[in-house]
Amino acid sequence: MRAFITGVAGASLTAEERGFLKEADPWGLIVFARNVGDGSSLRRLVEECRAALGRNAPVLIDQEGGRVQRLRPPLCPNYPPGAAYGAVYDRDRDAGLRAAKLGARLIAADLAQFGIDVDCLPLADVPVSGADPIIGDRAYGLEPAKVAAIAGAIAAGLLEGGVLPVLKHIPGHGRATADSHEQLPVVKTDRATLEATDFAAFRPLAGLPLGMTAHVVFTAFDPAAPATSSATIVGEVIRHSIGFRGLLMSDDVSMGALSGSLGERTRAAIAAGCDMVLHCNGKMEEMVAVAGQAPLLVGQARRRADAALALRRAAAPIDLATSRAEFLDLMAGAWVPEAAAQRA
Image 1 (cartoon, rainbow, N blue to C red):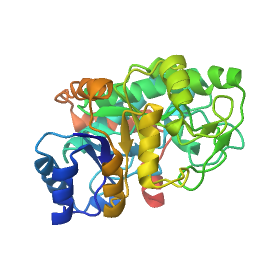
Image 2 (image 1 turned 45 degrees about the vertical axis):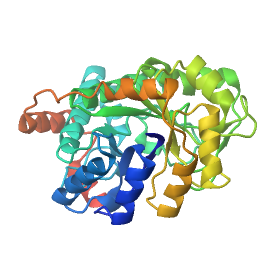
Image 3 (image 1 turned 30 degrees about the vertical axis):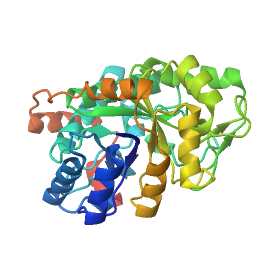
């Protein structure tokens, strides 16, 4: 088993992809809208990938709600962006936390239909004025304690539904003035401010099983390398200051923020201290390049991976109709599902 997560190209597995999965043996798979098809084809794709790997490999998805939601109606309902939970929290803290947990629990129930057992959620990014809108209303608020509380509720809801959460984007993407999908953001904020704001939102969540790095440079710690490929930031900030104990995966190494070949990006992330490399776009040439440089999953990285998967549980019972009605009641005034559907 190798220390990377891969995507595939479409709604069904090709013979070439099946052979790649068997030979390269990635730890897990990530699915996107291009893989969805109809409900039965997505479930079949997940089953085929696991069969090719010969084990119950984790299958990831970005199912946040709002702008970032790979499964949409009619397969799954639309869900609110993170800021809507923040709005409910502001008028009633307990209601906001209940809404966040319940929303995540309902998302977990949706994902279970397709065999998906890992969601790249919650975010603990804290946006600031002037930042690029890539985070924007995906964030739960502007205060670290509020962000951490809502993120914790979302993680709890996912776990209750049998889905593992992935904490992102460590140690923070909220100050980035560029979209890391396109270019490398550079944050020049001083250490004390970062410790008190951006990093503070992640500390209460340090015990979550999985985390994802930010492709962001923090010049106060490393003048050149983004967090994903900075041994200083992974060691000094993510593992020490934040205290994150779970498996640390890179954000997608095919994103525009990173430089060098896919093999070089993979080696740099692993050398910096990432346990796992994420590659998403399903392009076979790139998949082969990443697999060729991803190490075997051994040692501490393997122990963290195994500890995360050991948390997979059967979902707790839920009355979906009652829970969805309660959820909509909690979100009233902060989010209108019909409007969300029109924007999708």
